[in-house]
Every structure is written in C-alpha cells, then in structure tokens.
Length: 213
Image (cartoon, rainbow, N blue to C red):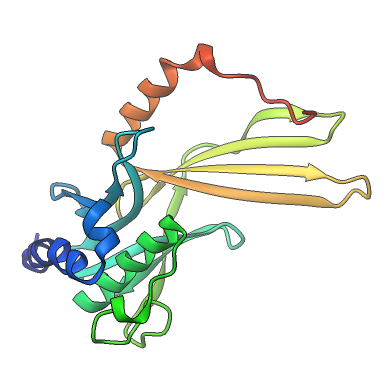
C-alpha cells in the first residue's frame, strides 16, 4: 500500500483546520483508521449525549493514491464519491462539512487563500461505488390501513468492503400517489459489532413504530 500521501495529509490536517477555523479548533477532533483496505480519517465532535458525533469521513484509495468522500444518492440508487485532488480541497471539504453539521455558515475570512470550494473546483471528480446487495428488500413495518411501509436492505460497497444499510419509507396518499424516501447508512465491520451490541442492550426501552400518532 502506498500511504505516503495519506500519512502526509494526516499530519497536516488537524493543524490546518485549527488555524483557519476557531470553532473547529475548539470542538473538532479526528481519528485515523490506517489498517483498512481504504484507510480513512473520521471527523467528530464530543457531546454530552454521546461520546462522539461524527460529521465527516474521508477515505483514501491507495491504488489510485487519491482521497474521496462518499456521497449517497437515494434518488439514483447508488453511492457516489467526490474525489479531492489536493490538500486545499480536502481542508475545504472537511471545513464545509463541519459548518454544515454545526448549521453555521463560515465566512470568507475563515477560508484558506485558495478560493476554490468543493462545489466549483475543476479538479474534483465524482464517481460511483459498486454496491452489491446481499439481501433482498425486507419489510420491517407495514400499516395497511394507513398505507405505510418501511423496509431495509443490506449491501457491501465493493471498493471499500464497508456495509451499507438502506432504509426505504413508502407512504401512499389518499390520491394513491406514492411518496418514497430512501436513506443510506454506511459502516465498517468494526462498527457493526458495536452498533449491534448497543441496539440489543436497549431493545426493551424502544417503543413500537406508530404512524397514527
């Protein structure tokens, strides 16, 4: 694995983000997972409710020696990726994700000298992930009288080996129009065991789903 570029970015990111954003300096943190097939850097803030609240994950493709951020396109039914060409694009992308998470627009004087943003750089490339769905779509909840259905499907991102859980809500209106909403959640094998354990230990505290409320 060619990780020189990955290690260099890891060494520069935290200091660079701290220097351009006072709010990030106060609350922003990052963790590094170097041993995965596609190493990644997770960015998070520590909160009172949970230990870590993640707002961005940055992946590295060692074969192509490029960084990217996954982007989920429920309307198109696939997972795409935004490739970040250089350290300035990477800093901009994480900085913007942080302020989107904080629901707080950052000002121009916080931005680095380069005015390129994730939205308008000619160097940024969008591609697609190949997701292999391991299960059929499974109905988890159905309310026939209210014409509501919730289903789940599990798949694996072929490039990274990460899991994808797709949640689909379907609601039929009185005019028999279908309203469909899809959400995707991506996670690694290490995270999966923690997620399963947390849910299992709190099952008794959960309320049943009720769309009539």
